[in-house]
Amino acid sequence: MSEATPIFRPGDRVRVRAAYPLGHVRTPFYVRGRTGEIERLCGVFANPEELAQMRSGEPKQPLYRVRFRQTELWPDYRGPAHDVVEVELYQHWLEPA
Amino acid sequence: MNEDRGTYRPLSYFQLMEVSLRELLVEKGVLTDAEVDAAVEDMRRRGPERGARVVARAWTDPAFKARLLADGTRACEELGFDLPALRLVVVENTPEVHNAIVCTLCSCYPRMLLGLPPDWYKSREYRARMVREPRAVLAEFGLVLPETVRIRVHDSTADMRYMVLPMRPAGTEGWSEERLASIVTRDAMIGVAVPKVA
Image 1 (cartoon, each protein chain N blue to C red):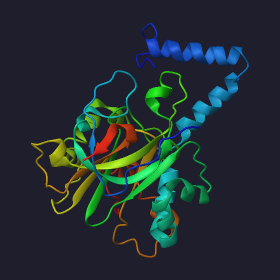
Image 2 (tube, chains in turn green, blue; image 1 turned 135 degrees about the horizontal axis):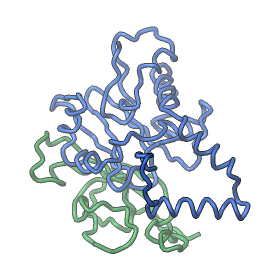
Image 3 (cartoon, one colour; image 1 turned 90 degrees about the vertical axis):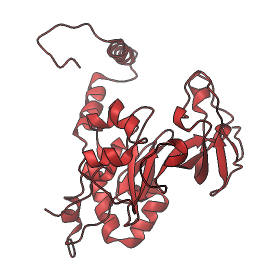
Image 4 (tube, each protein chain N blue to C red; image 1 turned 90 degrees about the horizontal axis):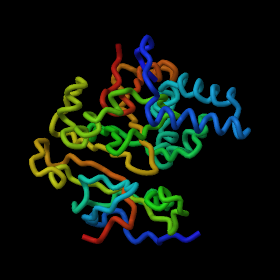
């Protein structure tokens, strides 16, 4: 079983890769290229992009909950600046910000 | 399923896929028809009662609540709810924070605790708008929250499933767990409503 080592910690600032690969990708378009903050590490899971191709899903990827301010996601967001969306993202989609 | 039972319609691609796969599994002896029927019936029968019992326990037992927020799956097992393959994250509403759940990519939902999801939860409209303008969506559900309350929307995109732990309403002091559970609705555990004392 090969798995990637978690490199981010709660509170770390991360940017989601602005990539557009085909296939079974669990990274919503609306967070790609956006910056957020690690809320927690959820565990290490088989990579769904690999599983969907009938492969083993290895190396397994750390899965984080990443918190985004609504105003970062939607520049015309009408609510208060403290509103947030939290999204589960795999480590290979994240880079330090 | 075709709702209009009077008219013949060919099966859709996915209906045909489901029938083919099911018949193959039965033919090869992996499953029996009775097992498939029982599993479907079990899913249909399940409602939000389990989730409501979890909430009522958390309202009456602070130590349980702490364990629930730390590891939702394990805490539910304490109540005898076995949640195979379900990694549960419970998020707590407070006077400062209101949580709501959505799955923008599909319709991930903690079925083992809440039963089948309502149709609106699977609709494109809810899925698209809940992350984009949650306050407007909540208002349409009749829930208007002041701007001082932070809205925390959870997009269930991968391996976790989510349940909201609502705030216990005033006027429920001294209630039994059973009575408390009776006011915990499915919508309150999705985060589009709050429990009310009738």
